[in-house]
Amino acid sequence: MQTDYFSHSRQEIAPLLPPSAIRVLEIGCSAGGTMAWLKAKWPDAEFVGVDGNPNVLGKLRSLGEKSFIHDLENPLPEIGQFDLILALDILEHLRQPALVLKDLVDRLTHSGRIIVSLPNVAHASVIVDLALRRQFEYRDAGILDRTHLRFFTEKSALALMKEAGLSVVDGVANGLDGSKAALANALTGGLLFHYLVKQYIMAGVAGQKDVPFKWQIASETVDT
Image 1 (cartoon, rainbow, N blue to C red):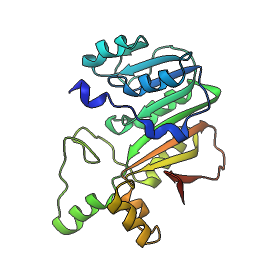
Image 2: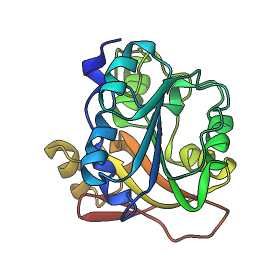
Image 3: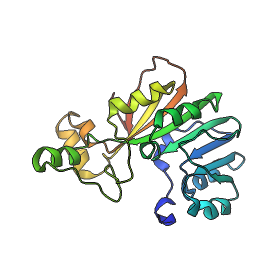
């Protein structure tokens, strides 16, 4: 696994962030690109990074933040409570994502939130290959990453959050920023929206609440 590949920051989560944060936990933080970006945004916050890949530990520690290597399938050690927890591009790699997410919910402060991203296996590229070519080929990255153990649609992504005791209060849909996808979505009046989304990014809070919710796409929104 190449550290540089995972050193980019996930700035598309910006619309889902709280105004400020005191303690931030990121699981599956890789080389810490997102933590470095947030550290510049909140210089007084405390950041804790956890990853399962020992090859990134040196890079994480170079950021000057608390970090450690841990098997993410197992409950985290006692590291306190957090007002923001990130689980980006990680739960689909785990055997029991709901159990991991429940463990994270227990580590939220009363007003904290968790931001989760999950790939959408109902994307048009996957459906076309299945329908026309009868093939399902794993790849080195993307929706059909060969290291993915779980696959999600919008419905099952939201269900995972609910199973963990979270209510989704906001979300960003990735994949419609390209000109072709944006045009296809516009020409069909949004009918192809969920077939063009590559990834659902959700902000959840503890508790089961009936929260009106719309997906954000840049400056646009689409009903869920």
